Length: 192
Image (tube, rainbow, N blue to C red; front, top):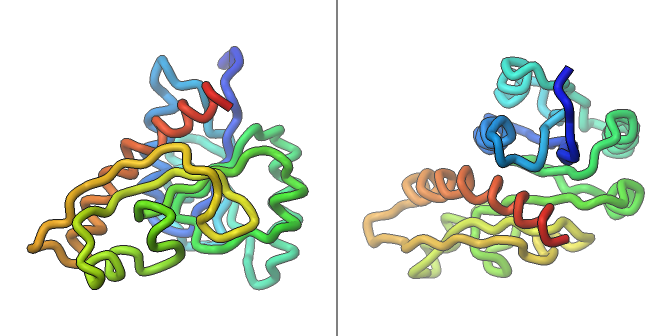
């Protein structure tokens, strides 16, 4: 049995391919990791991320989102059962209710594909290009009751090239997200 010697227990909420989940899992297996991913919850039964969690033998579940209250109450029961210290949203394409945030009462982190406070919500790459921004990037922030408005933990910016389109910018920022999210979690666990 692996000794958890002070490692924080993290639950990851996903909706899709799970590329950020995979980078977090890989980082969590390194010597310096201060966290362990113990639970993955998806609102999408076909999320590729569930397969990634399975491959790494991490408890993973699909919970239907047809009824948001039911999804949140079932998730909260699981988070309590597994005694999680932190939630990381990784491509979780739903907005958690204020009720959920209050009841969980522990930190929830999110990674967002823009330099917040700019471009909250969806279609960040398209909006950045249309507004002729010189830079974009990724932001890890604490989830609060307002969409993409919580305290910023970590940001990394990249230059938007004239040749960039929505797809190429998305690809570049996703690569950054994979590096930034684990660093941001470590920074958060060290300083908060």
